[in-house]
Length: 169
Image 1 (cartoon, rainbow, N blue to C red):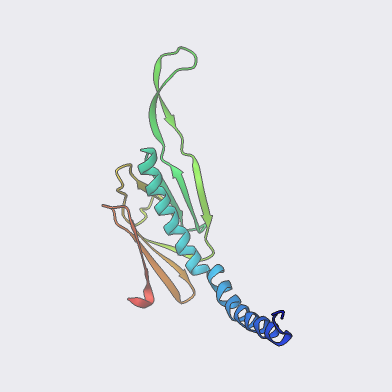
Image 2 (cartoon, one colour):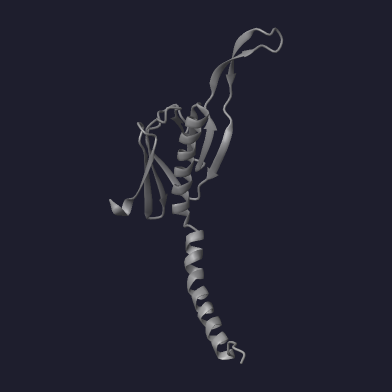
């Protein structure tokens, strides 16, 4: 005697699978498509973590450049002076190694820099330096989208970020 599934059993299994897929697709889309506010704070936090890691691994200072007017955040190497041979004479001279752009993000939300306060000589652009020993400069900023906001703080001793939803305050 042969054993097999009946047509009714197969239809029930297909219906249950369709129901599960129908329920899970909207939840999956919500996870995959972060709201601009969550994406913006995540991008800033990711670049800060990447800058700290690169500074430690490469033993070189890294900068996170926050531009408030253009709503951009960039990760660059810090400019430094190195000793290198002169291509013409062969003598060792000091050469300034320029910054190199590693990564940048255009935010689709409003970026408000709280600390450090921009002095009168800067044009809404602040560089936060991450050092090879894992420390960094102080940073506190808000990422705003409408009435919602997140606050990101950077601990200067550890170079680690903390993100707080302002609704929780």
